[in-house]
Image 1 (cartoon, rainbow, N blue to C red):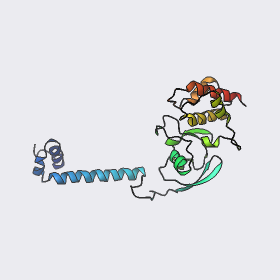
Image 2: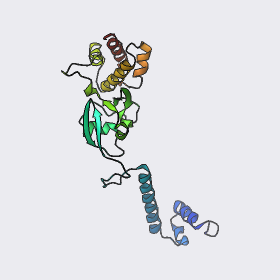
Image 3: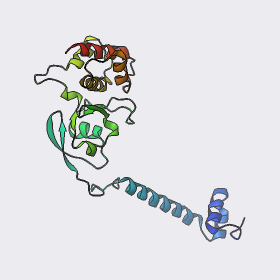
Image 4: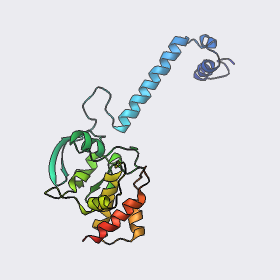
Length: 220
């Protein structure tokens, strides 16, 4: 195999895979070839980050014309918070606003432990950019209690039915149940099961949570 039969770049790439010695035949030293590959990877990585709108490490400035200081309506209160362009609602709630009732689970929108309400619609906070909810009314598990600390009827029903075991998935289960009962105060068992289907329980306490939803539905 010679550079006369292949393009020079193809020759060098082939030589690098098979045997480093032939690189000299292409007029490229092994060191220069490796440095060129590293430089190419760095350029490709930088281009990818720019396309995705991700700031370069060490830079605090956001890319593009994105307002970072937002006013969010969370649990009935106006909260001013500095939000990065690619920041998820889970990160904002837990690490900026201190609302740790919203849990971090799979971080892939599969387990449901981060479920919150946006205008009474359940959303996965780990899969939702905070900037997208700047005009929405956000409700977390901390916002369910009454003015004097009394539990929401869903929370009390879960306790009465001994639904929680480890309790890690409970906030997400409760938020899904609250959303259901706001939209449908008298659901059937199948409707309740469907509403909770996006929440995984590693303890397997599904029946307890389902009974809790039906008990809460009876408390008008």
